[in-house]
Image 1 (cartoon, rainbow, N blue to C red):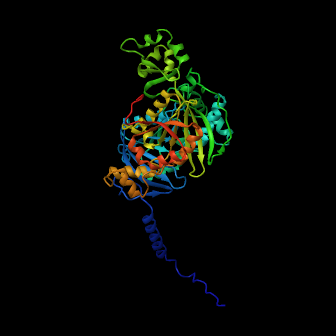
Image 2 (image 1 turned 180 degrees about the vertical axis):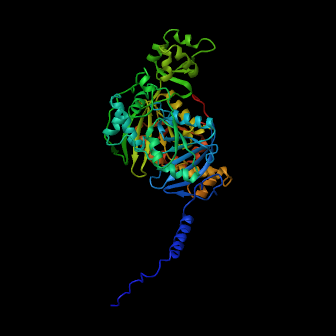
Image 3 (image 1 turned 30 degrees about the horizontal axis):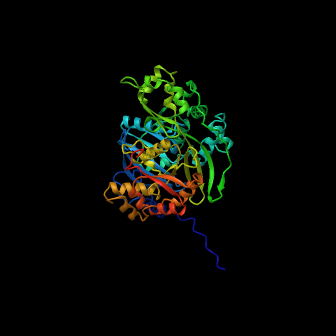
Amino acid sequence: MPISTPANTDQPFDPKPRQAELADHRTLVDMLQHAPGSVSELTPLLERPIYATTLYLARCTLDTRFGRFRAFIFQDLVHKAYTIALTYGDVVHASELYTRLHSSCVTSETLRACDCDCVQQLEGALRRIAEKGSGILFYLMQEGRGVGYVAKARNRMLVQASHDRLSTFEAYHSMGLRKDHRSYDTISHICHLLGISAPFVLLTNNPDKVAALEAQGLKISRTESLEFEPSPFNLAYLASKAASGHALRQPRLSTLKSALPPEPVVPFKPHALPEAQRFIYSASYFLPMRPVDNEVLLSREAFEARFGGEAARRYMEGSASLVLGFERIRNDRFIVRIDSARLQSFRREHPDDPVVDLLTTPYWFRVHVYFDIVTSQEFVVLTYGTPQPDDAPVVRLQSESLFNRFPLTATDNRDKFEKSVRHIIHYGVGAILLLYFDGRGAGFGAYATDRMMTENGLSRSSDESYRKLAVPYDSRDYDASMILLRHHLPGAKIQMVMNSPTSLVRKKEYAEALNKHRIDIERWIFLDEHALGD
């Protein structure tokens, strides 16, 4: 066997070959890695910069009640969650940026729930950022403090079953969960891609967010609180947050009493539906929903207790009337229309007057949450009332839209949800199935890309965008939806709420699913054509 000759150690070391090799490596890395500020208005529309595990998807304009924001959409390649960076003004050259890290809350931002303060914080932060002239709101898909809606719903079920004797955080602990599972790692990635280096004025009540950002090397110049007056429905939740270290004063000072659900809530263990074992029935609890168009619903007994005799007329008198009118509706119930602004002013001077209770009288829907083992998504069904044999419940399949969680000036999707709720409340029995999948089932990434393409003239319509994206016109799982509706509404007939006759014609899969599951439509309610009661 030949013997190798040892290297001549007497020769001087020459660093030039190694330096040249490292330079070649840096060139390779530069070819792969995107530099700071790679995402801007000038980014070519087909480029998708990436940093670490965060991928840039699209950008578009959002007109809100507080001004025009720019939305930059990112997705984490590990957890698959989206982050929307809503920017206002010049975020690259600002000396400081008013900033909010906001975790998604489908119940308050889409379903109008009033058992937390999330939607108030969202809108309050956007208002303050616009007032300051420049800033950014990071909207993170981290429902239920990062545990997802299934665990959040099970938490709410347990808290309600305990009559608020268990706090939100105690319920999470009993379920084997930490008080907070959120991660903010994508924030530094997005700041790199957007070229943001200014220190943050962080709009938060949570000191943990400050520590999380500073751990990533981001600069926090100071924090400013976002606190709002508690209600009977979120007082217990806000008190639990204050006890866990959030900078909240009002829960400790409030003289309100927490409101309990209208019926007992009995917790249960998750189980598969016998007729469709892909669905794991995970939770059920009561959702207090803000009334639509200031129309408060009262039972006959509650109406007579507040407005017996001529009491209602007293609140309707004069140019500054608190009650704008009332009517008796189906099943011996009453709709009372109020002027909420006047009533809030009246409450400050007359806090004990029973009429002020109308400000905190919600619609009580029951929420049913399912986990689908096929798609790994949640399905949410809201039910109202108990169907009787002769009833034809009012039903709506409501497609989710993440952008419509923000206070937009164009409220088409939100209006459709509210109109559907109003039809259900007036009839007295119904259900809404929430389809989470944006973009007609293709997902939020496809929807945001469609917005970018049409905004920049690359497509003349969403249909053309979807052809370029190579996705079908409608990818929503109507078959799964009908299975869940049939489970909750086993009767023979329903009233189905649709946008228009045209939308029904275009959704062939929708009609096929109705026929397959033998769902009898007694009446079509088209939101774009029929007023309530037509």
